[in-house]
Length: 230
Image 1 (spheres, rainbow, N blue to C red):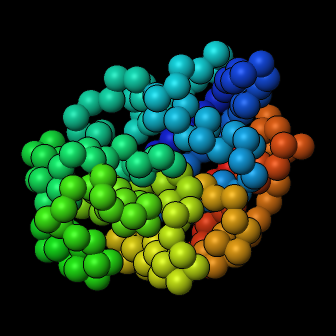
Image 2 (cartoon, one colour; image 1 turned 45 degrees about the vertical axis):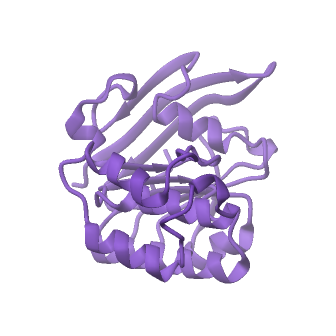
């Protein structure tokens, strides 16, 4: 039986005068690739940030690797990779400096993969991050998130700043990574065509998600995958 990586039970979160999450039941099992599809304001980022402990929920329970996301152990943190919707890079550093800084926080770090991706994506490493384009910053954030080879990768609108060719390339690599490394992936997007490239089963979200606001759960991309939306 696959390990339950993320479990959210009866989660309520009130944002700007209305519920972004209302009685949400949601589960991610080890090895799954799940997507969240919805227009801006549908609650995708709120769900992800609540799952990670970056937002305090109003009611309900959240467990990440069986722990409270607000007080994750170092071991659990080493199993997790996260790319936020708004990149939180150190813009006064170069890419090389920033990646060296984050490397110190992880028990494992794949230098060869980092170098290969920097080269493939043509990211300048000797200029300040603040001078990079939006697409270059987003790719750099992705490299930072996967350099320690996480078991669970969470990406909030990971391709929003990329051009169509860049989106296709990244999503193809996302699926390849999931299959080759059995990485568990949760990602969000508001672009249906991006979802269609990686998911073969789109169902409306149940279990308390406000489906009238456009939230949908996109289940496993693998042919033998089972839906993970609670």
